[in-house]
Structure formats: C-alpha cells, structure tokens
Length: 257
Image (cartoon, rainbow, N blue to C red; front, side):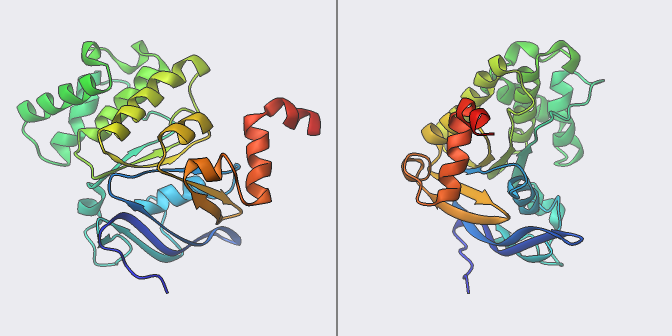
C-alpha cells in the first residue's frame, strides 16, 4: 500500500476514474516533488487530461486519493475551494472573458476569490503580465490578441493567484505552430524559476529539455516513467517506443497507416 508523502507537492494514490462503463484511469500511483517539472505524454484517450482534472477535482475520482501539499483533496470534509487556491490550471482553451481587458481578466479572480484590494490585485496582475512578456497589453481585449498571447494571459491569471503548483493541460494544442514557441518559452522560464509543474503535452522537445521526469500513459495506466533521457531517449516498453515513433516521425506513421 502506498503511503502518504507529506513533502510531495502532488500525490495520487490508487486513482480510478470511470465514466459509466468506461474506465479511464485504472489505479494510478505517482507524485510530483516540490520544484519538479513532470511531463505526462501518451496517445489520445490514454487518460492524461482526466488525471490532471482529477488532481484539482474538476473530475471526481471514482476511487483513490489526491493530495496537494499534504492536504487530501478527496477528503469529504476538506475545504475544496481553499485547497484549489494552491493549484493553478491552464487549459487547452484560454477561457478568457471576452468583454474584459487583459488587466481585468487577471485581476477578477484575485478580487472575487482571494478578496485582494483592487490596488494590490492590479499590482500583482501587472507583475505577472510582465513575467509572461505582455506588460504592454494590459488595456487590450482578448479579440485583439493572438492565440499565443491569450494563452500567456491565461498563464499570468493563474500565476497571479500565487499557486504552489501549476497544471498545464496541452496548453499549446489550440495554437498555430508559429505561436507555440512563445508559450513554451514562458513555461521554460517558470521551470527555471523553480515552479512545480505537471504538464500534459505532445511537445516532445519541451518534455526532453525541461522535464525532470516524464510519465508515459496508455490505456489509463502509467506504462513507464523516468528521466527524459530514458523515457524519450531509450524507452523500455514497446508501447512507449511505438507511440514515440509516431509522434517523432509523423511521415513514417502515415506510411505505416
């Protein structure tokens, strides 16, 4: 039986998630250490995004336990709103309020959820917009921004809440290829700053360069995990090798099909 590690930033123990008869997660055990960057890779439908959504209880696990900073989010008596404040989440879609300026998008949750005074929320918003390279866009509206800029606003919004851990659910998948680099650049900088990050991604170069550990999932289970040099560079399992061959050499995959 897996024991609780109070020093872990994130820990999931025997995590199961089913949607009706469809079992999406089948007994996941893993943890993210403080200051660690963990990238989760795997084919579509492998359970990666569901795992991420279970970590902050956007999806209720069918069975198992989730701990963030030693606090059990799956405890029925937990203050889930307080616990979620320790977690920043960045989705595939940007989910910005179209009728609000960039600055207002980054201040609204600070004021409504954290009850920060407007002046303090404004200062923290501007600091984090500068952090993602958008100090000059505070008065712009989402429709005036590129997709990459909108995603960077979403990252600034999450950072402004002061999270202990950041969750990224394929943050570049909705972007045009030329816009991906700016978002990944921001994430690289966060990693260098010591931010704890759990990242679901198809960007193998990012996982190889930035991750401390790579987790490969397939069929709702963790097939293998380890440093990028092993999991991506020299995978132990045939399922991992097959996935990587298709991701890293799409032309070969098309010929195979």
